[in-house]
Image (cartoon, rainbow, N blue to C red):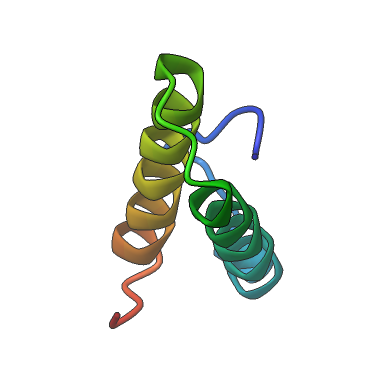
Length: 60
């Protein structure tokens, strides 16, 4: 998970960052844990992915 995404995010890193975030998300989802901490992590990863897609104008 990326520590800090801000409006000045460098889209040159989007390819690598998206790949990493999607792998982390898949890993969390495969555990199928229903605790709050896991759900919060899934939500944060989904939000980070959406932020990068929108910020960098990447079609998903």
